[in-house]
Length: 134
Image 1: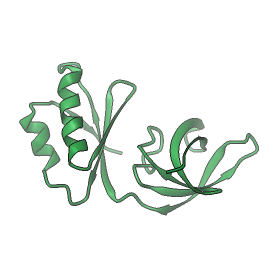
Image 2: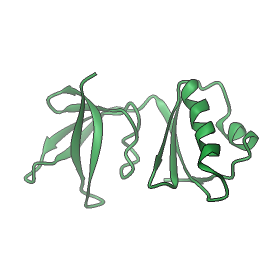
Image 3: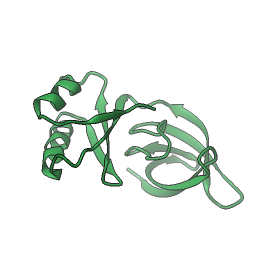
C-alpha cells in the first residue's frame, strides 16, 4: 500500500485537514480511516482531487463509495477509556474499524454484513453513547 499524507481543503467548511490515504494514481486516493470534517470521506471511499492555487487538494469527485457502514457517537465522561477500547477491539477483531477524534467523538466503520447488531453490542457493554446524526 502506498500510504501518503495529503492536505485537503474543504470549501464548505473553509478548513484544511490532513488525511492519510492510499494513493491509487496521481490524483486518485482511497481513505484508510475517517475524515473528521467531511462525513462523506469514510474508510474505503475513493476520490479524485485537483491542486488549488494554495497547493492543497480539493476533492472533485467521489469515484467509489465506502463499502462500510459508518456511524459516529459522542463519548460520555461516565466511562473509562478502557471501556471504549474494549468495544473498539471487538469491532476490529470482526473486520470493523474504530477511531476517536478530539477525545470525545468515536467513529466506527463496520462491514455491511457485520455479524452483530452494533446497537445491541453497545447496550450489552453498558455504554451510554449518543449517536451523532449528519
